[in-house]
Image (cartoon, rainbow, N blue to C red; front, side):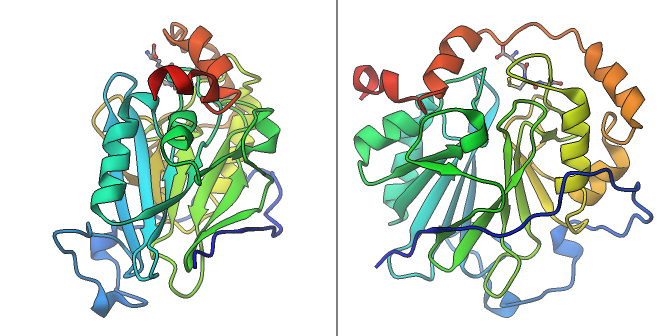
Length: 295
Ligand SMILES: N[C@@H](CCC(=O)N[C@@H](CSS)C(=O)NCC(=O)O)C(=O)O
């Protein structure tokens, strides 16, 4: 029996936080081992992960430089799994991994309405009809599950907490692994485009606001423990993972004060994403309108 449900809990309010007072963060392999660590071993089927319950894979789509994340509770008999930010072009690859590892995909989740690629959630639902699509209610998009700030998305004994991180778009959410027994340590934050490694999402369309992004990141992400792993939706330079502590010290945009940050963001001068006119309408229905032609 799969336990996959939502529940709601209060979150910290959006407000600015003081800058970091120390650099006491370390990558996970230097951190003291905690909960279940003695039982954690990688195997041919289970990639190295920070929890004995968690199977974790970082997958890449090269045309849009998008990361898709696969998480599963492999100690649960059904091995329930979630995909975060799947891309339509790589759905078959991702579903192959799910199948080969004997997982049961429960949720296909989006951090936000993407502008640079079509989400894979619509196509996944045509191929695995029991899967539920997930996006924030604040995004204005259609999905099976519309999450609110503080909602928890459970798969087996693991869960993800939804933290609102608007600013790149109105409905951006960061999914953070739980804090508690059986949950991965360090925690993992799937930041979408709110925090990129040594960067952040642009704020010049889809209800973006540099002021709101700064507030979101400082109140909802930089308040997490410094060792929390940051997994973004994109990387354009070859980075794969960072930590909250690293970004609080070295992010060239988000370490600045608000005025400087706004100035940087107003002068990025990035061209619009090539696929924006196709991607946004499709992603407002979680990729469902294209599903039949690609199934
Ligand atoms: N060239 C790409 C789009 C690149 C881009 O604009 N990326 C976005 C995230 S996807 S909307 C972004 O926020 N970038 C921030 C940055 O500093 O690069 C394309 O044409 O698709």
